[in-house]
Image 1 (spheres, rainbow over the protein chains, first blue to last red):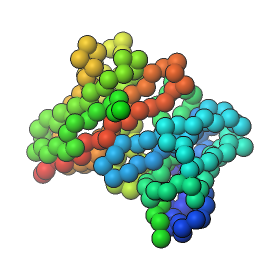
Image 2: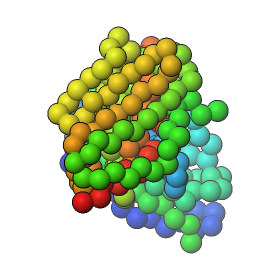
Image 3: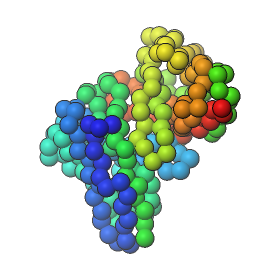
Image 4: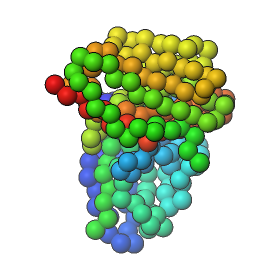
Length: 112
Length: 113
C-alpha cells in the first residue's frame, strides 16, 4: 500500500548485530503493528502500538524492541538476542482498534 | 496452540470454476473474521470480512460464509481467475480484547488457465 513505507526491502544481519527496520505511514492511522512471517507459517504478532508513546508486546516479542515517538513512525529493532531472525517482516496500520489492517510491502531479513 | 487453522496448504482449480478456501477456529471469543490475499514478497491485502452477527457477506466474486456453531468459515471465489493465484490467509479477532488479529498459516491457491 502506498501509504505505508517499509525500508529497506532486503536487509542482512551479521552475527551479534542489531538491525532496525523502518515503517512510516501517512494514513493518519492510530494503530501500528509488526508481524513476522516464516515460510509455510501464518503471520505472528511481534509488537503493536495503539497510540504514540505506548506499545504492547505481541505473541513473539522476545529479541525485538520498538518505539513510537511519532504517530507516523514505528521502527522495529531486531536485537542480537533474537536467535532466529531470518524472516519476512510486515508492518501494518489501522485507523483504530476495530478496523482491518493495512500492510506495508515488507522487509526480508536474512542472517549472513 | 493454533487458534485459527487452515488445514489445506494448497488448492488447485481450473479457471472459471469455484474456489473454496476453508478456515476453522477454536477461540469462541472471536467475533470478527477477515480474509487477506498475499503475493510473494508483498504485504497482504484485505479481501473481505464478516462479523459474527452475520452468516454471509458478499463482495463481487468473493463470498465469505460463517458457521458459528461449527466455528468454521469459508471463502468462495466464483468464477476463479488466474490472477487470483496467491496465498490466502484467514484471520480472526475478539473485539474488546486489545484488538489483535490471529492469522492462520495460509492456503496457496493456484488457478490454472
